[in-house]
Amino acid sequence: MTEGVAEGETSPALWGMHLALMATMVIWALNVTLIKWLVTVMDAMQSATLRMGFAALTLLVLVCLSRQRLPLFRGRVLLLACCSALLMVYANQLLFVSAMTRTTASNAALLLALNPLFNGVMEALFFRKRLRPHYLLGLAVTLSGVCLVVFNNSQASWGAPALGDLLVLGSMLAFALGVAILQFLSQRNVEHPGQVSLNTFIYTVGSLALLLHISLVGDTPVSAIAEQPGQVWLILAFSGAGVTALGAIAWGRGVATIGAGRAAVYMSWVPVLGVAFGALVLKEPLTVWHFIAMLAVILGTALCNLGSIRLRGRTVAG
Image 1 (spheres, rainbow, N blue to C red):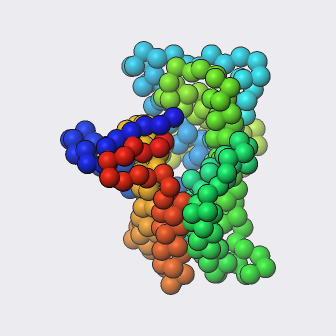
Image 2: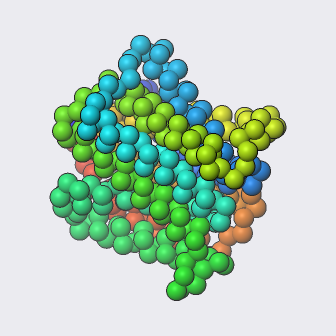
């Protein structure tokens, strides 16, 4: 689909959307630090379950307020949609919170910059789309920056990168596979009531899977959740409802308004802010490799999105 916005347009609504996207990047970057803190004060899987539960509840409320309906998938489509939910929420969170017990928030923020690149590669593999030279160059530059961080981790060697960093990459791979399945369903003309409704389905199924996990194979009794102090509950609610649910809606509207190409450029701020929050809030040590990697990630992301932007009043492909 192609969305168009004139480059010279300066309406208040457009400026508001740019501000909303920037605010979304700030809270997404902060969320990495919050998750790192949460896994140090409570069971990692329980924190993931509660965060995704808050996200699902928030989306359910929004669906009810907007008088939408949940997707009515059936048969093979329902199976694929559930598979997508399990990858995007359950597997993604299982791997990510496990990673956050083993790596730093700064490293995780830099690695998360690969998310849109993973999605692009998955799209090329599954739907036989050609990757352009500037995209491949950007991918190489970004991967080089990420490798600098992974292999210069104090827990890593050039023969064995840190397990936590590899788990972050695994969580992103699971998410990208889930997105690819959703894209496959959309290309099969599978209809759903809207993006909020679809997100509600995805997070509800994923949250239920996480709840089943902590109930059956969790290391900590579920009753321990009630013993968490109010501060922890506030951060869980903010991370789930504010960051995950409302952040996803803001991102979706941003893409629809200014196009995927221009919106994706904002993703460059996540590793920058994520590294800063890790250092400021958690007092994580930074090395020269973090700054070199950060520059490589920004440059690589910009190169990957170079072809998506058309200047001088032309439209932006989304």
